[in-house]
Image (spheres, one colour):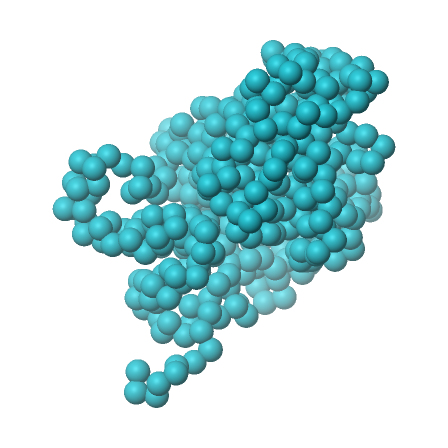
Length: 478
């Protein structure tokens, strides 16, 4: 029997697992997909919010600000990309400037430092591509951008090397309480745990409602995005928001930590918890609203579109804590925006609940730091040469768009919780994320995965069961 079962290997579940792995606890993370980072955590705005947007006194406000403050140390310890680029909230009408002031005051109540309102002209001196319609701006220097894949993987790998087990392809079908343990089943296997952490994203209501009479509802809210090539990456340096109006919260325009430009999302409440399609109407809305903020968006530089689902709870706030009528069942439900920003703090809050109840002791040998995958393209020529001499595979470029080498892909496969699929390699190395969107590197990446896993190339998948990349051979004698 496990002390703790964490259901969900997104950024909230893995942040909790990392914090719990500091203690002498038997811990297992259950994930319905083939890898970590397969749900909301991989399809979002990649923003570390400053913390002015949430209602004072709410968990969203408290945990957002706390998580933001943790990011510098975490990114250094766990080796993932994070950059404080600052954020701007744009106001397009003079009569709405008092709303900016309300937002500033709210942010200060939440503990956000250094907020100030600047004129449209001053904002354009900082960001020359802002439209002439911008009258005033709330500027938050503590806003940031992050690699959500890298952060999620860093939490997971660090939890794993500190003793947390991970079980993939485990899609929870039932949870029941017997004696002092929860029995969690996927219909094929049963696993017992004294505590369960419900970090199942858009399915967190389903899990809660299996064990508690205090029902919750989590609606998926779909947001669609456009990603631009790195040639458009310097269009803005800050993250650009729009002041919420009666027409909605608007569309953001932001650089990414990898040098791309990201635009979106819109917001559409849906019923299907698996619907991550994009639509012509959604893309048109994103383009039209983004043009209010930034001049001359280079639409010929769009390389892909995607959508993600926000887990929108019915309470208006994060739902975190022990279910009243199900002792030991800990919810982390309704974790919508600013969930990515708040996730490290959510992890600590969950850890505190469980450790206090179990009176668990801290480990003496907890491994605090984690080394990420070497980024060959960012090394000096001398460092590149030394690495190639040590491991010649680093001299073989596989993904030309992102300059990802065979050595990096091998590291991605061989490291803790290593990649087993094309998408697994992609989120760890960015192979396939560039301008050609994997058009050239896929065959070589498939061959590397097949060789490393000792399987046929015909068995390599994009993201697990039902997604084989190849359907057969075009020559019988191959």
